[in-house]
Length: 344
Ligand code: AMP
Ligand code: MG
Image (cartoon, rainbow, N blue to C red):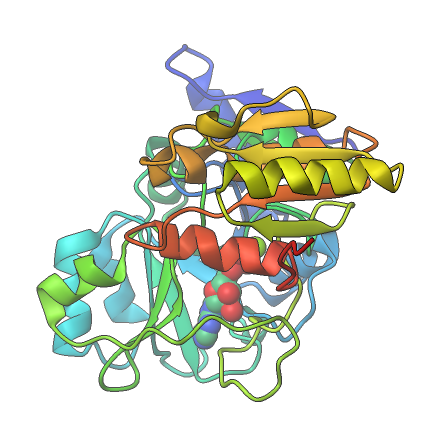
């Protein structure tokens, strides 16, 4: 299959670009598009065969449910059987934006593979002009996970999507680099108090400010069967080819780690904040200012992906402070590293 990448900016060709995307979706095809979090791979959420193509293109396990994207907040009235008060408060406060709400789905509205057989559905209204324009022109809900091959870091540029999915999907809308760089916060509102299933750009503190108590599960190691979690969270994620080790942001520790790795004739890529910039590592990528987790989030996936273009045997990543959006970064890093910390 030929994969087209069309740039969507303010030029006159935009109308024809959106028309092509809408036509593909209406014909039961999948289309990749930018959101404010990461690029999504979308299909019309009521079309089972189209949704199946998302799983196929990504190599995604069928028991990992998808998020349904809407162009207007009120659209969800047609799709969910109840909107608890706290959910409504969060919609008012954070939509459009990087917050996915798990709610009870009306039966037989979405294709069953959207929710992986669950009676709940994850919904969100993205805050990105291209995603919103596409949704409003289509006038249908779009089911979309991140537009990467399953297990790889999520795509934050259209080129990342191209790298993973060329030949597997017909169309990518290229809206440049995404803003936040991490996936949405997923909160389950079918339980009381609500539970954060996946941390993201909307932090626990931001949620608490508007709805009071929310449960934040302790971080889990991938494959740990003792900890309850949502379907889909059990899969390895965000992982480049070489093994990732987390390391505390400490100069001496980092220098020592690089030495140890070199002694065993291995090559190391270091992803760390500017403070730890070094020519000792074989590759270095800056995650920005240690005090600014937004920088870290914005660059993380692009740099993890860049490691796949090197011959690094080991990837070291310094961890950010867990406050604010740091919690989301920490969560992704633990999965990328499969829970492994560097210890010399
Ligand atoms: P992604 O594929 O990266 O966009 O991630 C989608 C996330 O939303 C996954 O972590 C899913 O497990 C989660 N999700 C979507 N729908 C549901 C649902 N009904 N219940 C629980 N988690 C969900
Ligand atoms: Mg994903």
